[in-house]
Amino acid sequence: MVTTKISAADMRSKWSKFSESESEAIKTVDALATQVKKSYGLPKEKAHSEVTAWVGQRTF
Image 1 (tube, rainbow, N blue to C red):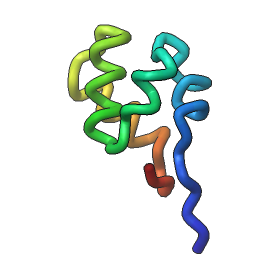
Image 2: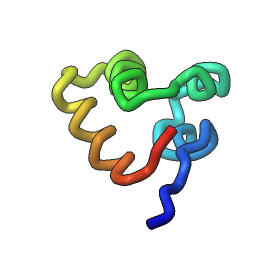
Image 3: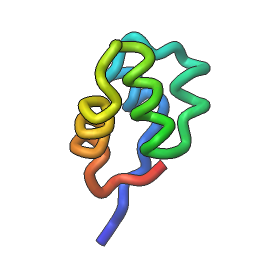
Image 4: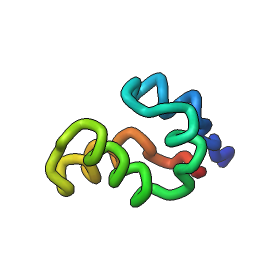
């Protein structure tokens, strides 16, 4: 099975409120969920759920 890596551009295309430097600094699912929570004002559980679903089998 081939695992696809998530790029900063992938994240910015999904979450457009991220700056380039913010998206380039994200290296884990937890860090991405924290940034989604911060940028979009979502509850922690909702942000983590959305991120987990979007990430799927991909890696950082």
